[in-house]
Image 1: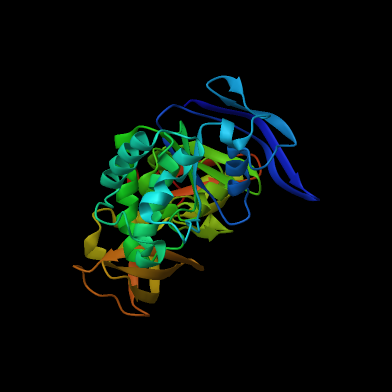
Image 2 (image 1 turned 135 degrees about the vertical axis):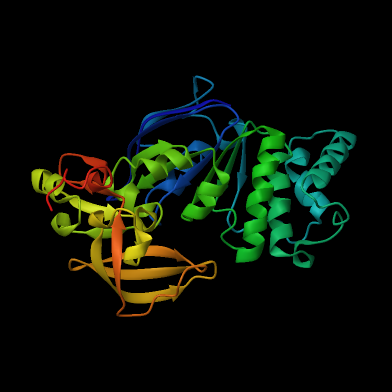
Length: 354
């Protein structure tokens, strides 16, 4: 199903939940609606489903306006955060419920349910009740039930929020594979950026009711279009006065910009670790945190405390140790624009103020 949303707007009393949101989704794409809690993601999802009515704007499925259509007439499957399974029904009956409501023939229901039981890895659990299943298995039942009527659009409201971390990681990969096999247009709400980056074909970042950016996970991470996106995706350090950052003095002075610096933009080490020592600045290690696969290092540079990563294979740094710091690039922004700047000193040590 091809989805188009035009100038969607929604109030709940005095609260402006969704503000003039427009987007298109191509058929078969898996889209992540990502943003902080209360940003408007679920409101958008519920308006697509017909569970809420927009104050203004249009929702079009395959070019046809569906604003006035009831939820059951929109060809949508919905997976809720809380599973919403019927406790008194078996796995088989939960999956079959929507087909039974539509009065589909019994043999067709049986064939469809068994097909989905196989597809979702629930074979052998057909006669169990929800309380006899793990959280991951219950969520698979919820997916199967939503897919049973063969909807054209699958909507998922934080589908993994109620599941523990290990199972959630497994279900992400499973969901991605499932959607690819079924080929259904899907939109899922999450506030977990790792989840969105890992699962989605495209991400739509929503904040305070507005669309901040839409694009592939890589494009959004590499080229954030707003300061909010730059600070929300990945880890970043905000520098209010970046005029002391080695190599960026001229750019900052000309633009009066603030800076966001990601950990991977920063390289640290001793003098012997850098072939272009003149592009580095002096720094002091403030904190070192073990992160399992790497060190997270906080280093003070020119009055700013920056965060970066360091391999476990390298020499362990000590708090108070003096090191050299090379900032490869920064994300600058002011009231008029935002942009990424590569450190000019990496190309020519004389190209910036020294």
